[in-house]
Length: 308
Image (tube, rainbow, N blue to C red; front, top):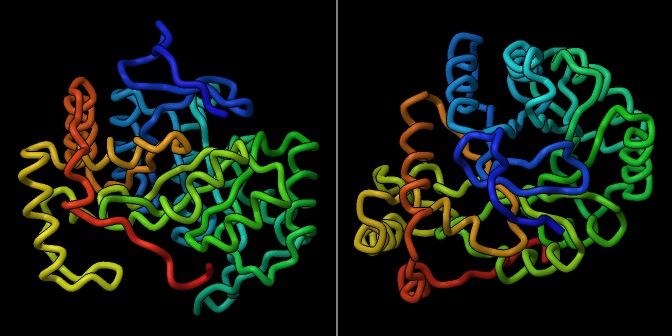
């Protein structure tokens, strides 16, 4: 299980935690790199993240058909020993560029890692994640592929990125995986009922994506979200603003980090200003004693209806 403790002297002022598969403590905020579409933007945001104390970076081979991994690799290869890089596998781009296909086979996973290593300019990946999954997938074969890559030293740890509770629970049962990335926020509390406690008991820690609910918990205009009508989203936003004030992003991140199973929030951003604002908000909130007693009134707990 992750052990949460004080920041080491040689690390910038951000909370960190230790894991059995990471060479150094990981920042509780990770940078989601999916929105980087050019080197200039990616470099500016990644460098800002490093300055803020973030040492955990998440990408995928699917993003921009591998170009996103190239950006991450180009910026971070000179800092390789200081950072933790996660990427994902399982979606194979079609040669004609018309889309991608789900290919959860041992042969594909073992082959695809070579392309990711080349693009990332590294000889190992800290965390290799299955990028999706269905309950019908060949799970023994998938697990065998990840274990083989771990034994060879090409990856240090592995996990899954999924929002399907039946897939997540099965993955935890059949693998020795380290992590599960899933969506969780005040507007999507379904994992509380279906997966968070299960993963915690299994010794896997959760990487949360979507903590800001596409900006809806950080001041963006209301719209429909996960089946919630716009009017209901507005109601939550009004109550959330009353609770969180001007630090809505910070409160949203703190909410997502609250369950014991959660290790890091993977924060996506498209600008330096957005990243600084969110991290600074969280660091202000992090010094306060937050009162979550009215949480169920702000946004009631939810349950999954599909993939149970």
